[in-house]
Image (spheres, rainbow, N blue to C red):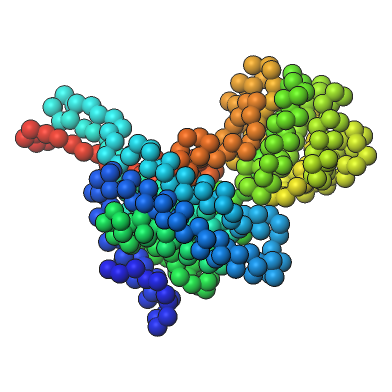
Length: 427
């Protein structure tokens, strides 16, 4: 079945069904494709992205201009913008995925029953994955690459703000598929900005096996509410850094500044800083000073206000806010137990970090915090599939069923049981 490249001449339900049929056909073929063919497609797609960089940047310029006219936030603009380095990162990401071990067909466990039956649990593709995302055009490449390596077909519905950028990247991906002889339906981009396509996609349970939303809270809430298909998601990234009383000042300053300010618009950016009261006198003012001098607005409790007169008084809402911009809330707490309690009440189960030289405090924090990612003496900005050695990620999951944390190639597979006998019948 041919790939749908335009919705001209047909209603959205009919056209979306055509996308679904093409994806289902492709998924059946991909499940049996050799690793070498998938890797060839990924490497060729990386080459096509590099070769078509000028076209991709031109498309992104058009998207950026329209986004600025619409008044999108600085965080959204940062997510949308492409440059030479980000294009190279997309291409390198596809090559990194190609270098990963192929999970499909891996034997996860094997055992023999007393009656001689040999039972294996074997990784298999999920089938067809629908990815709905906003702003970031690099998701087009990352998601497609991960799904392909795991033997899945993917239907991508990018945000209206990244429409031209995502289309240009998808064209490069199709070059890779074509060079490897894989069906074009393996990677499809919904070719319309009409939001009705999202609603239709969420009902296509006869074609799509999993939905992955990547975007703001309102999008993810809508997907979770309306989808008739299982969803892998996270709602918010209200991430915390806790500076313990036994933290080295220099390390704490570097980690906090990086966790907040390296890129403020990503879900792994720190949104709340907690400081042990034992370290407040020595650590609070320098850390706050670093943040303010880097252009970050600090909203703090009474102790933070006393440490620097440039701090703005925090409200109750601040402890529950994902800013995604250079703003951070700061609170002094009574030790690691109080930090854990604060995170349990206000966190989003995404990513939390502790800075300390106290091994017992670190282990308590790592053990008791109920988040997808916990770190000791490292920045929350490492909450990323690429940094975990996964090549890339399709998102960060805060769910507890199927996948949690960075969703990479292995997380985009399921398993089946393969039973080998020699004539056994059940009595």
